[in-house]
Amino acid sequence: DIQMTQSPSSLSASVGDRVTITCRASQSISSYLNWYQQKPGKAPKLLIYAASSLQSGVPSRFSGSGSGTDFTLTISSLQPEDFATYYCQQSYSTPGFTFGPGTKVDIK
Amino acid sequence: EVQLVETGGGLIQPGGSLRLSCAASGFTVSSNYMSWVRQAPGKGLEWVSVIYSGGSTYYADSVKGRFTISRDNSKNTLYLQMNSLRAEDTAVYYCAREYQGYYYYMDVWGKGTTVTVSS
Image (cartoon, rainbow over all chains, first blue to last red; front, side, top):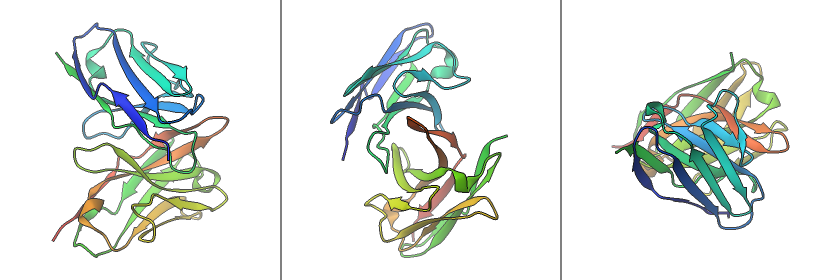
């Protein structure tokens, strides 16, 4: 099974900050990596698919990069509505797409 | 509008059974890969089960033999039959559509239904 790790597990940031979250897979997953945002009490929302493709309707301040085993999600200028938990997910090994443990972004 | 609405959650005793439903609108369940994902209180996301458009079904090891995923094409609805429930099955259960193109991702999610297994 492919294991996913994320770092950091949480971070505190201010509005306007540039934020980077890292995701690592236990084996190469090419670009089969997705990012989701989840706010408290809400369902996850797809932000990025295929490592770097922005889902329709997602603000351009979100971007993704990486391939193989190492990936990053970057928020170029953190906005108040971006405080949430972010999960990476591998979709290389089917069935059963493994999620990372999540990174909580809160207000400094 | 593309939408998923889950129902059927509730409080159930250990060893009991529950069936979750996920009604879809704006697209056809049977033409898509459909998954159930759960989230235990304060925890991360865990994939539970998937049914492919062709009808093949797959399960996480943690629920294999106890849960059954199915769909009713006439009702455009996805189901999760949960038997022999345990305390560790307590979670919010989400249904999600899996986009299957060159890359795969869960692009449509329901709001979730809460299952609590407790005596």
